[in-house]
Length: 490
Picture 1: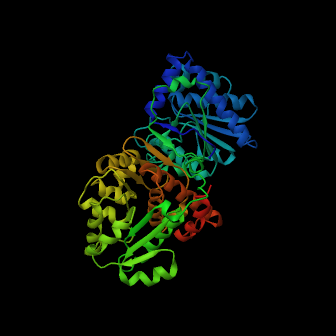
Picture 2: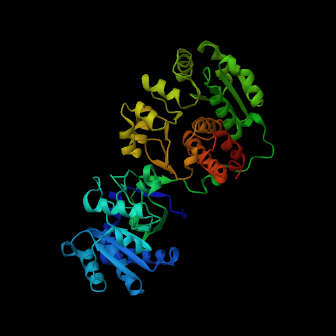
Picture 3: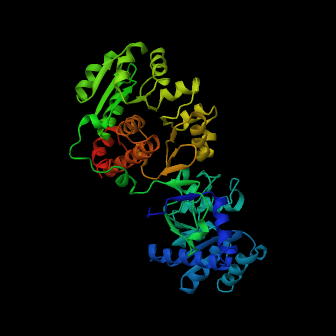
């Protein structure tokens, strides 16, 4: 994905920006449409110079108008063009109608058929824009299915048709594009949820609108840029000592789950924490010390055994392998109401969902299932709007919420941050434990709650991307830990 601005907007905000450009800055809508079409056409020639036959699928509205501009430009360049309207051009209005008339004067329309795809080098998707609010159906759904099945290269104009530009959810079926040029403002739904399977490479073009168009428009979310780790993790003073970088205490690892706290503890240490301790079942102590002797490991059989350890720690990480038995409940209750900053994951979140409380100094790191329990709903509802879900968790429980998944979201209840790094190899056990320890380790080093969550999420994802250079399938949390040291030393 090419370097992008960090500001993200809802579809409604982008339409407002478009109106500002037209009404407040005197840029005609037809000029913006022509610029969008030309920008897309330039990208097509750059990315797909071998394309000789192009199929352009045009819907109604301005998105379809962009498609008509592209069809005309392709024909003017001497390419064979199949121009397939999915809305009667005579029913269009304004700029879209004028763009359609100009294109159809140069290129005759053609009925879409899957058979045409066999002779097509490139498909331009200009079917549906940012206003989609219901599942795609009928002829458009059939066409999208045929395009996806054909394995043709696809350029999606502004947003892949069928993908919600607000939430990143696929609305029934969505185009799977190789390239998505998008305009005026980045749409938040392009960067989370199911979008990763649809967008391909995203390229942004502001269509030369003045920067003042954005004045007073607060972004709905922000991307974590590639440079955030470099800016956030400076070189250490040459006089540094371990006492300057905090003490993390990881709590969890019921019987049979000692590996979870080992991973979390090592991640905290690899993040740069000065000291890392682990509380687990006594049966796990010897194995953890043998595997990672830098950890200080304590066997505890009841919550009452925590007091002295809690007093020495700066930050607590609770939940990895904690379990849903009485042992885990007692440990969670012993730390929940204390005075140390917390990172809560896994069964710590499940215990929290059963007895909700609020704190301002913790980071909660749910996956969609845990998020559903925290909000007393189901996973489908979480996936319908990940932005709304992570914001609701942060506002209800306080602190910072991290909703894991493709396009991980971080929210303090005011604004979301979005991490687009990471890969499908992270879908394996122990990855969440590593993130928990990593965030706790950064928090112990003096980063505030939001910064430790953002830096931790990004470092976690980037380490996984480096570890996945040998392949995504079979990637283990331990592989991520091996890559983490270079990531946190940018």
